[in-house]
Length: 167
Image 1 (tube, rainbow, N blue to C red):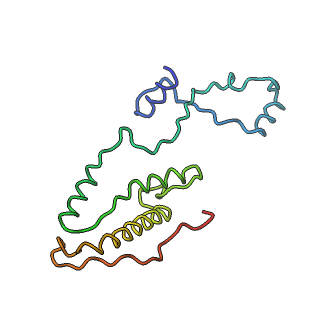
Image 2: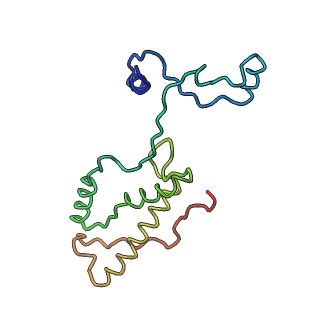
Image 3: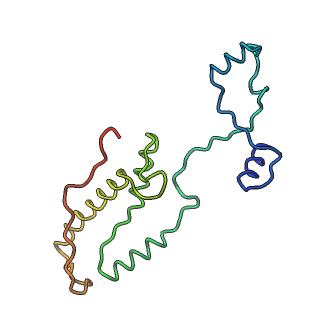
């Protein structure tokens, strides 16, 4: 069984020939102690402790194959039918996630999929831009059409949350 087969068999709760072993490195102080105990200076640690082959895979935030926008299309159609405005936040959140990832930051909490302050700031900025664009187009269009007599919501406050600097 090769390293890849062993890893996959383990991840599938199968019966690998042995437990996969991936060496992360041996601390210098441990090597010093081993040398005091007789380990030759030129000893090949990889030969003494053979580990499974590791593959490093670059993080790719894009779903493969790209997901269809069926849910967004459905929501957008329902909103249009009800006369409610909506904005798709997927693109801006993905873009900000790509920007933040090299800094070790995310737009959502690590233990669930809810937005953290970075994700909320992206949503707020995107919605603010959407409202500002709508205000311009609303000068020529009656918002009451299709809203069943309801008044449109007022635009949000201009004091939107921004991520804290240095975090």
